[in-house]
Length: 338
Ligand code: DAH
Image 1 (spheres, rainbow, N blue to C red):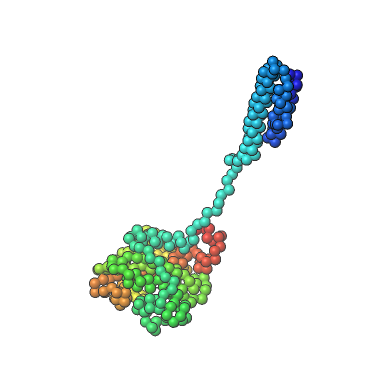
Image 2 (cartoon, rainbow, N blue to C red):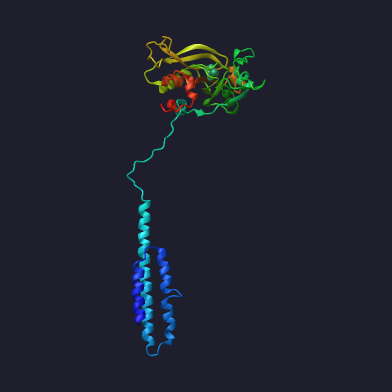
């Protein structure tokens, strides 16, 4: 009995001083394991006189139970303490300022192209992207550009071989659209175009155009003027003026160029508009009957108008950009301004 009391005191003080889970499991083995004092006391039970045995047995059992309970309590306490420590070390200070990600922005050419597409799609036009490579048939012949036209010259056109070129305009897409679709047709066709121009502040061998084509019964020059008038006002502003000047294109007859009030001086005259108050926005005209015919559309039944404009030039005027090369240098100091 004395031994049991001593054991109880030792066990209690051992458990009380446990600091972590490792120590706890060692002490558990020491107090309750096969080689523990408690186990050997249990084994000695058979040597005890029969009448004392129940009382002794009961005392051993309750000591064992008490040790187990204490160990479990301690285990819970240590677990809680360790968890708390872990939470503390992993805590996130939500009052710290955040780290913001740099968000990209649209390229100025994309901004202008999106605006133009929005204006025409709101008028019921479909957007059909143009090709980069065409046969000389689509790029020239079908558009009524004669064999002797200067545009066919190798000095203006990138020939891939004698039959294929990098497109010199988005106009060939007119033919492809008319071949595939019956009127009514109402499309715009944005794309890259290529010319063997020397690089300078206003010329690059690659730039962008947007083509437009409308074909239906009874389409007239007044449809062309009305549509492009609305377009110019939507794109540039309600207060501008437009004017149409006669011009020549092989694929339209009659042909015109449309001017708009100069963005820079609002019409009073400056260097940009060469003191005319107007700048050229696009080329346009009534689709030449030969072109309709080439694309399989009967010019006696249908008529149409077409137009084409350069994207870079419009963006340069709108944003006051003086060098076309800036668009393609991928300099964020430039691009982030828009
Ligand atoms: N293809 C012409 C050019 O590259 C632009 C153009 C003018 C397109 C008149 C047209 C048009 O569709 O009708 O300069």
